[in-house]
Length: 185
Figure 1: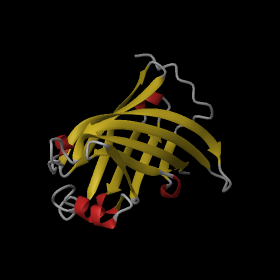
Figure 2: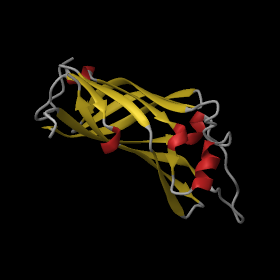
Figure 3: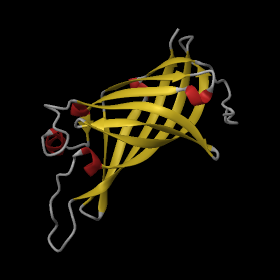
């Protein structure tokens, strides 16, 4: 298979650690059928390995589900409970890539996402935002990634009815990830 014709200025092969200070893992879910609730995870780790052949690159991440932050501590405590993430028994969500492919002008990172002990495939649309030297003498790379999942696929199925019809929460969750990673020497 020929290497995809994707040009990434400054691309270098290597191992990169996610910089948690300059990275955001966030989500959006429909609420009460009329609005959207946004949240993020404040604690996570991750490694990206850029390979000489782009398609052989990999990514992995572990997200502390107890670090959920929707801006409302009461709601966050409920999401940590057995009704949602059950962080007492499943403290982390993990991602392990299984492949990287080109779809037109876009990169698609495929992998396995595990939540509540359930592993399902997920595809993330990825944009490479750039590679640059940093002020500390190192090198940084930036990515944006997004995707969707159905929360029921992972056993996160708590919901409540709305008088007159409908549900408190939507099934689809949109994931947005902004990554800044540092090349390891």
